[in-house]
Length: 407
Picture (tube, rainbow, N blue to C red):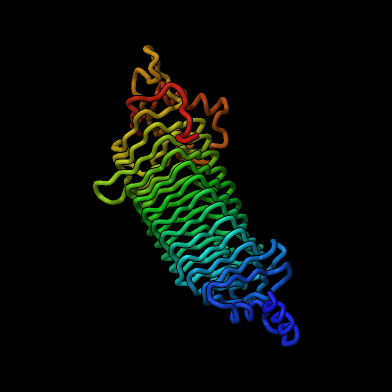
């Protein structure tokens, strides 16, 4: 502490960067306990250190150019700080915290505000990003930076972060990460994966974002017990799979989205399956939306209720019936359960009637449920003007709603 006070006095005299001087003079592996106050940012931590603030009134403030804190050493912990005022240039990835080619880094219980990108991890492993509050600069949505960005970063833990009014939470070319118990709101992609594998995504809550969780060109991942709500608009969806193989999507709650599940050419790799079970898919415009050739998905134990359309296939002649449906609850099932075993006596079959006007003009979905649309829907079933197309058959439909797995 005496050394730190001496550096404070020296910094005042020389107008130097107090915190950078303290870092430069600290012994490797030591701890810098910072009293409340404002410290000049744009610092570089190039040795193992612990930097901990007294409270969130301990502020590290950038000069509006570049990144506020850059970490280039393993075994660095930054804890209990407010980090603010980065630059605003996307091509430089100006961030609150940037970790580069390091391992065993910890960013814990920090508040990041007025930063373009929040926490940027490039070739980082075995690190912990937990308990942080992150918001971007007050730009239009597409011009904000990503709250958390993983690039070729493996085996990290990212938990209990609160993200608001940033752009995306991005996981690219990164494997073996645990992403759990995070909360994201008013962004673009709550979570966006590309070229990843063996990640675990669980117990996250994402509300009022453009897109919930979108997996692309990825495999061998588990997504369980997440809640995605109110992803609306032309791109709105709850959970999306594009060119994804060997996925487990289980026990999630997918509510009030434009599209609940969006499945595009998944599974992608031959002889693989995706297992989609025990999810609540409720009150979406479309419960499950198939695009392109998407076969061998296995749907079991899901509750599909209150959606304007339970299942939609926008690509014809794609053998959508080769997906497996077994033991799901459908609110539109009209069969009986005479032996009271909880399973319908007859299979549930869902047809697509070509004369549904909202298939030709999606804007008419606004009137869905009105007497006129209800009558047209009834007439299409009673006297269809063309042969209906089978979308799916659930061989053992549940009579009663099931609760989501783990709840």
